[in-house]
Every structure is written in C-alpha cells, then in structure tokens.
Image (cartoon, rainbow, N blue to C red; front, side, top):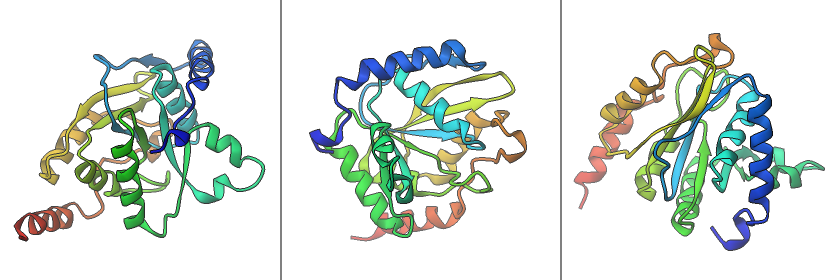
Length: 213
C-alpha cells in the first residue's frame, strides 16, 4: 500500500474520538484485544448479520487505533458518498474478479507493515457458507487472521485471538469454528457456522500445489 493509500495520521485522533463516543453511547460492551497484536493482519468480522456490524467494526478498529481498511463493492464508491467511503477506509473491489482481488490484497498487506484489512467471509447477510478468499489471502501474504466478533448473547463485541493459517484447512477452520461457537449475530436467525463453501476442495488443491515442483 502506498503512503497515499494509508489513512493520514491526522485522521487518527478524530477516529479515536468518534470511537470513544460510540462506545459511551452503545448498548454493546467493547472487549479490547489482549495483548494487542502488532503487525499486518486480516480482521474477520463475524457473524455478519446486519448493517450495524459495519459501525461496530469501525468502532472496534478505531478504538484500537488501527489504520483499518475494509472491502466494499465498487458501487458504494460512486456518487456523492464515494469520498466518505474512502475516508472510512474503504477499498473498492470488483467481486466478479476473485483472483484479482486476492492478488490486490496480498500486494496491499505486503507493502504496509501496519495493514489491518477487514473481511467478512460470510459475504452477504443471506450467506450460509463462508467464502475462502480470506484463507487464500492469509496464506499467500503470510499474515495472520484476527477473529473479530459481535455476540448478542453476551452483548459484547471486540477482537479475539490472532491465528496463523497453516494450510491444514480442516484444522484451521476447526479452530475458527471453536471460537465462534455459541456466538450469535445481531440478527440471530441469520447467524451461520464458519464453514467454507468448498472446504475439502480447497484442502485438496493446496495439497496438490505443495506437491508441484
């Protein structure tokens, strides 16, 4: 990521102040990351069941003073609100080019030692399975994944453990499933289990890639 693509330092105090106000007024209780992780990473936002997840995600990241970026469909960045989306840390993406998206994010995280890229693997709020793009990005960029959450059962939201994806897809996903087990999104009936749409297929493809010379 180029210097111009990073949130200017002057924005950080403003964002921190907005986050402080948000958590002062919010019915949700913030659970801060312990200990704070330093370095580039992906931030998973799950369960993703409501538009309010976006506000909570920004509140978590800005409270932690993370130069957070998030992925959004390119249509969000058109028209009068495009500049606002960029100010909020948005990265316009073409969802019709998943391979290009992975390559672009890998380039971003490799060029910025403080990159914090938010992804919502369950995609739309009507999804029943997770998309595997985050896993590919984590492997190819060699950066870990921090498990962010919102849970209406406990009324909490925050950042959980930071995990390294090993290439053992079932094993890695089992660790992710264990963390999110029992957590419900804002719209509880839309909460889904963290399971990739082609978990076995991805594991087989990665194993084949490792065997290639």
